[in-house]
Length: 324
Image (tube, rainbow, N blue to C red; front, side, top):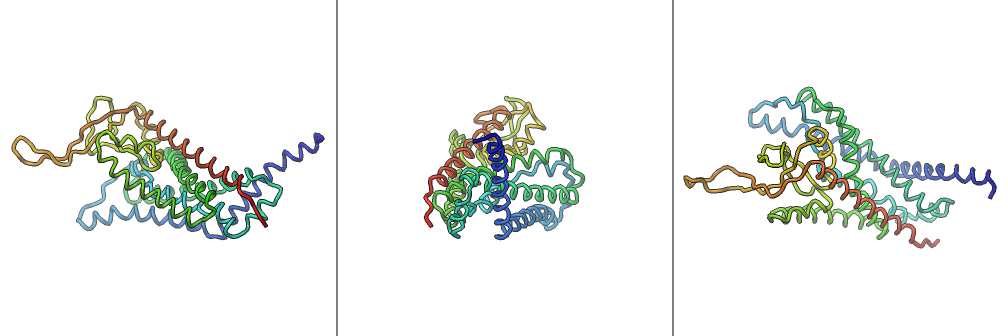
């Protein structure tokens, strides 16, 4: 191969990659996938903004000003799961179901390039959804709760939300690539999500066992932010989620409170006081960890899931036999 041939080959690589990205984005547009994701993101955020004022109005109370509404409102786990599932549930399996996989893989493009192009297109679909969600959150939060502070953290929050969603995208991609079925990818991923959510409620009820939740997909264990390792948390303390779904809130919390700790505690719903009456719920601290360690663990666990399941999806696509 001559030098000019190698140069042309090197130029073809990126052009083929972006051709796959454009192909996938057009596929998403035809399937109205991008529109659905953006619409759901907008509706969810509007509902979240309207819910609290509506409830306060029912009981006759006024909405109090909250300049930290935007930075203190975490992305619910069901949003990261829903976005991840909807965007990639038929990204690869849909090609097999529609028969378009034959002409796609017959092109002079490696399957690795096809896989990476589809993943990049999924991210380009996901990021605008989160940008729209946070634009509505900033505008709506300013209208409902007054001027908002720490808005410089919004891009960091979006990055954390994208990382959390990538975990579910990787899981759904792996299922879809292995089964070649969009329905199975959706059903199995929904079963995993709700199964883990149900199991988390049971596991967290046993003292000393809730640490397992940190290493499972989802919100993980819940801790309370404290200024020192020996401080006592209260029910009004800022909560911190340790799982992959909590990366966004952990990131912003770490920027604001870099030297703080997270206390993991068991809730005592009722206890008997000296007079024989029931006292208010209290927290019994089980363990404490530096906030930076909690954040690093969540990122590491998320990265592990992303790498493992993307490799499974890639390997399944590479090993698939295509017949005319």
